[in-house]
Image (cartoon, rainbow, N blue to C red):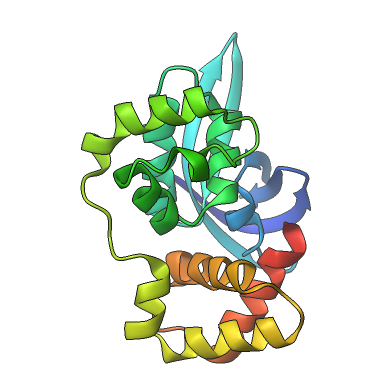
Length: 198
């Protein structure tokens, strides 16, 4: 089907974006982690996508990273978790935090996502634990060991009045999307963009 879309950002809407690809406007639903990374209107955007067809209606879901797309595919395979629920989960946690929560069977954390009760959280763990495999090190640990710029960004965000957990989660999402070799200024800019969408 449609593996990815590459075009110009038209605008950001609640829950998604409009992308101009060769003169055709695509409405793409996306998690807040992807929406928060969108540039200004008219700038280039590439999204990894999944097309779902239900009741003769086609809906396109887009993600800034292949990892988030993979998690989305896994989530919608879980009984009782639809596309909207999967987006809510991916909007609530970084990819690394979600993987760790599943591996550690952290039902309490997973059930904090909007629309996810403890029963659904248990089902997610049951059905995805083996699929996702062992977790990567938590982003907090990766920040300590790999990205000194990430540590500085967390400190800067805390000094701006954000709670430590919020700051770490925002920086973790930037690293999920952009990798670990991101400059301090860009980490702070993108983290603030994400925090503004929360």
